[in-house]
Image (tube, rainbow, N blue to C red; front, side, top):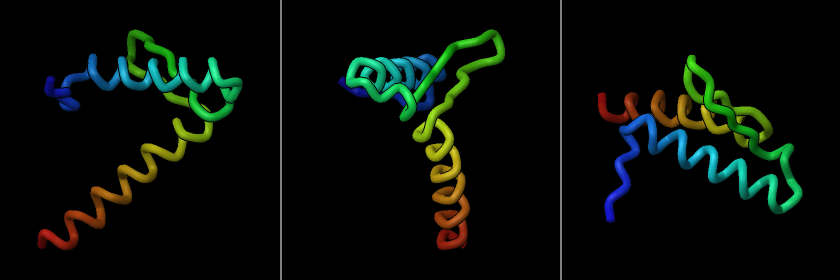
Length: 66
């Protein structure tokens, strides 16, 4: 089984599963996710930190590929 992270539906599914796990374990402040017509909306601590970390990784990775 291969997970294609390039698919928007895969990203949405993983985010919603993560939000469900956070809610089920009593920590909804860690990750919230909702699917809107505009796309996936992430919130909570992880939802805010993840795009920042991905952006930093992309910037650093591209600098070394130079």
